[in-house]
Image (cartoon, rainbow, N blue to C red; front, side):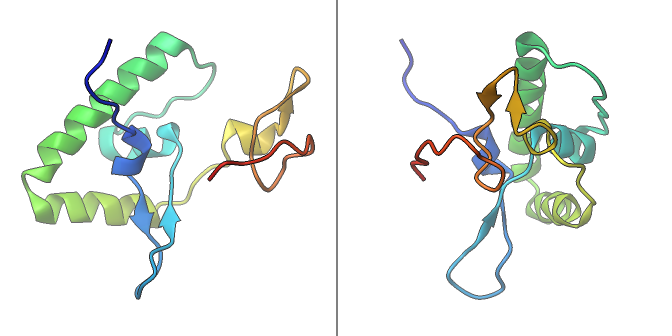
Amino acid sequence: DFAELLDVAALFRVNANAAPPPRWLYFGQDHVAKVWLGDRRDGAHDAVGDARVSMTLLHAYLDARRDPPRLAALLDLQRRMPREPSFAVKHPVFEGVCNGNRRTCRCGAPFFS
């Protein structure tokens, strides 16, 4: 049903190491949206709203990719701007379900990456 899959989170990852090997930092959608779109999303999330933000971020990334200094500046700002803890960090278990955060997981399920 689809030709390819694009991991939008990987577009916004930042290398935390100055020398090899890379150590990738991944950022939550709310943080990336705050930096790239000036969008502060406080409150509840829903699938449609999250999908809309993902697509808007994808288009913002594709536009910035045409201007490498601007892309580098946005990624650097994203790395430097203080992050608020994600929902999964704030709530390691929600409604009895583990949110899969490696540092806070209590269920013992395996991680595949």
